[in-house]
Image (cartoon, rainbow, N blue to C red; front, side):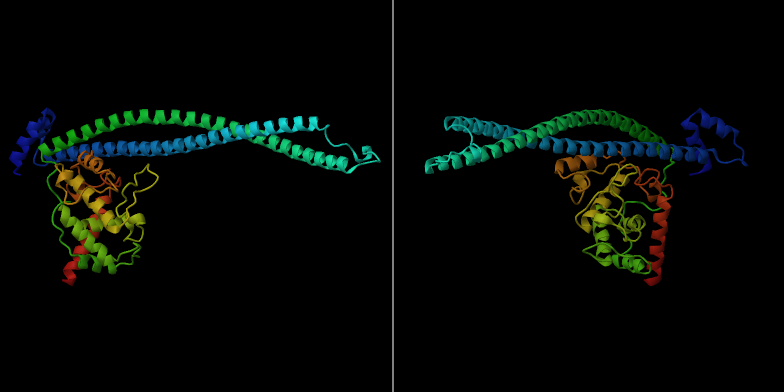
Length: 393
């Protein structure tokens, strides 16, 4: 842009810019360059703040799910304890009935057995039989009473455990209610910060502060799978992705990138940085997806293609403000956007940072990663890959 035209644009931005331009001399810095730097810094800060809030929201949702799981488990324990209490009470009732019946029977038959010394000398067969039966009945009654005592004790312990679990449930339900209230507040704060970031982005675009620079996220994949895999073999990386090979994985990046018009070779370079050359890629997660600063775990993908597909689709969402689920070649990843197709489409379409990173230079400061050197690390790997491809045809 000619200097005169750039000054006119700066004048249109505001009075402060007008003063700076009027005071400028040929020896001073171009005020438009300063304006661009400030606009870019404003965008970076606003986007970083929005991402920070999104991470807090994600952590709160994770906590919500964990507490809900605990509540479900306690509710199941309470149901089991209640059923056990019912069974024990029925057993106590039955045993008490048995004791009453046996006591009445013994009373009718002359009471419990006497000591051996009390047995008369002229003992008859009938009296011996009676004594033995009475002794056996007394022993049965003793065992029944012991069983009754044990059952009553168990019933009391179970009822005590049930009371503790019900109290624990009440505490967890209150905790869940608090978290849900926090989620509403945090979602509102995220919406506010996203609005600020989008406003800063619009202002920067209006003054040309976000002119295309560096490598775009969208576009055709330039390097071939063979070139990417060949470059990988020149490094001292270890390949730890079960069920596939570096050649097959590189081909997946080409195919998935081509399907969504995303630079698959640069996505490959991103994964090199994220996984230390595919030596640490648990559950086919090749781009640290779900590993926010306050999250306890990352997302899991059943196959290598599922991991790459989610990564490519998320890159498209970051790069293209107009991207929609209906325009994707493949449905939104159920492992990233949601298992329900309607929910997945809605999550893709409403991604709060949509269009915030059209180039790889826009990555970092919250866009995908918090590191300020994130994009430069990826672009360095990509430059090495290009140099290898040029040297080896």
